[in-house]
Image 1: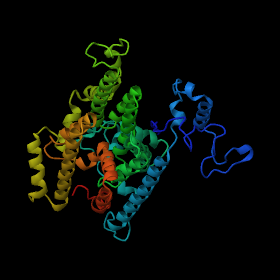
Image 2: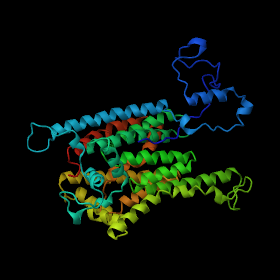
Image 3: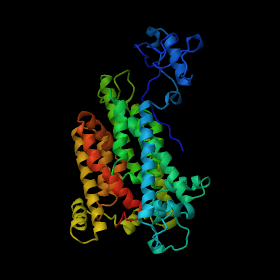
Length: 471
């Protein structure tokens, strides 16, 4: 599975000394000159060929020629991307070791001299639902099914469909799920790094830092497990990058694919729409018109024409509508998805005050066992982080990101109690990019995060892989 990532590089970038990297320019530092003066160690990629061709054109002419280098020619990995991927692979190895240790520390069954299987450490909770959907579909019976309490339809079909496809190549279901998350996570962290680097002179440092904050977040174990977080991010973050580059068709298509994975794709669609409206307004102002006359101020182009990409922003609603129609055809219930959420996870509507009160009582009111109580405490902490993040985004007038976070908080904060909020923080990319930018201004932020927050990563990874996440 691959996802194209918009790049932060520009073809025809100046070489050492400020001049274009054309013929006759000095070899890059560390490159050995070969026969004919050509530096060794630099491959003739299509992107570099395009740079050299542009370098031969006089400056006064080159400035008038639009750069139409195909996207795939300039999409190579940057040094910052490679740093992000290196960190990603090391953290995957670390989580694999955590799962190995938990197999020995918390073996299954009573034979305490025999460790549990390593793959079994990842077969927890929602993974069982995803596998059953991939193997049996949404409505076929299987051994041990309790039909009145079967809530499979609460899970969107994107991940199970991909799992079924990968299973045709990887026979073991669990290994197939882990492979999906491994590849998706690599795409996601590179995209996150590029988002953090957008428009910043220190982008080469901001990207790896954003990835660091994400990969050492308390719920990071879910990025490695056969869950939907990695796959959603691998689609949603490139969609956001495409929107920032003005590529609305790509943004809409990737956003639609993200919606097949999680309902949060609809929240992404709302953020994309707000981003487009802001871009149109900014362009209208730059052209000398506020759009009130029906034109963009640069020759009478109708404002409606600039809003045509709004259709692409609404494309993510299509998969949700199709899935709703599919469930209606099989169950006769237009709200089958919502009703499954209510039956299985108490996600019926309550006011934010009621939801907070119920969560607080279960966290500190001695109503639950200590294992469950501490999970509710984590829910409260994650919700507090989300509210603080939303406040910062509103103060800084980051309207698109604020819309995305606000919709997430509304969905999570109006159930009977808070549920899965720590997992949801993984898809809040403004949190990780914001922490990265803050840490570049205040060096102590990264130290505090690594010292105080990151240790929870290992604790919760052991909690998940040992089967104690929910009590």
